[in-house]
Length: 186
Image (cartoon, rainbow, N blue to C red; front, side, top):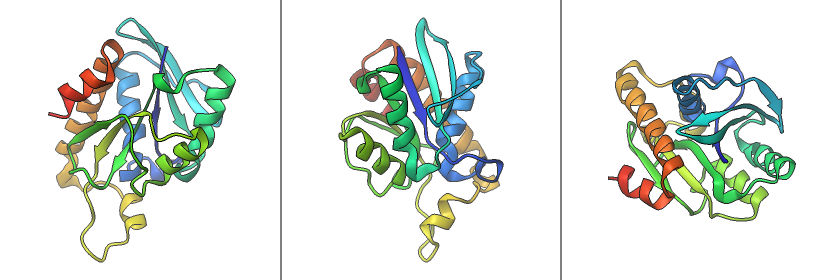
């Protein structure tokens, strides 16, 4: 079994914001594979299904971004799952909008959701798909930037990035993460 955690903030006011691309990717992955988010447990909304023959659980923490690790830890403890089977999907300021970067370890790089997951799991070694949101113009506060919606001009790049993320996630279920990185980090 694999479990994929998309990071974001709960509530309609955050739905289209840059910080919620992890949720957007999981929504698309669920739609492509007939999975419904129909369970509320472990501080998350959860959808379960089979993707490419692999039992897969999609998890959207409802803790707010900076407490994402609480939901990850709750899920790990309740279901006794392995961290090696997890992939975290989230927004990344240091990746250009429209691009994705896959990594299997590293620091939080200032991302509070990842910082929380590292704190609650005790390790920096877990698979991740970073979805690019680019950095704001100088003088634009980071918090305001990540909690604002994508401008219309970025619509096509956002859609492509979400589709590429789903392709990478689906590929990763059939291949090692190293193979997935080799294919999608281009």
